[in-house]
Length: 264
Image (cartoon, rainbow, N blue to C red; front, side):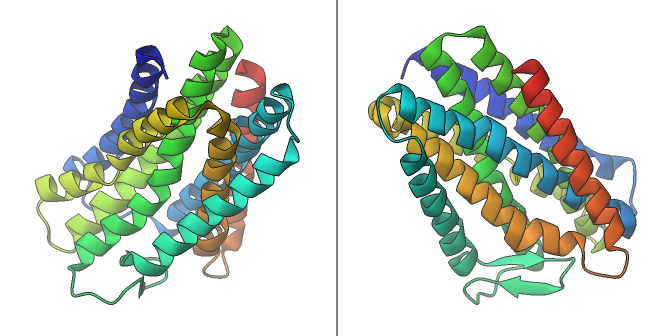
């Protein structure tokens, strides 16, 4: 893969990381945690964005790439999707992390601090997001087509928008628990650093073995859908006010679909 592809991937995932950082910075202006209804809307919104991105930005391009190379379109799309979901399942099963909405700790039992477990939970979400954005820019560089670049920018914008409240969802609860504003901000910001790391790494892998692109695109889709179904949607519907989460999901899906179709 060319240096330009790596540069675009770094810039796209750098933007999503910046949005997480900006969201974390609200801790310097507010001390209260996010209202429960608002939090459910944000969780739903993130799930809607990730579902739409998985379909329009990842699975459909994966099928088209496989067919363009003379292969069976659904095969790498289905195979990569299953592998991506399995990858996140294993991370979710073994990586210690804490879900404040569900008040429970998952993964291998450890004696980590709650703040570390909270950051670990959000980091799980950000890994497939970074992969998705990085691969979209790698695909654009591979085709040298303006339409592909526009679609990659649309994906980065959609992921970035939902990363802003995600950063706040880490820093504000940490501040409530007694951490300093600076420490809370740092933890929130660091939760998003995996996006440029995994975004660039996956581009390097795709460049080394070009036929893997359809598999990697669908791999990122499977990983994102796993996060949505296993964590985001359940957490957005924890109590009787589940309508807020539903509205957020519909809004996120609609906005991401429009961004991808209108700008793609």
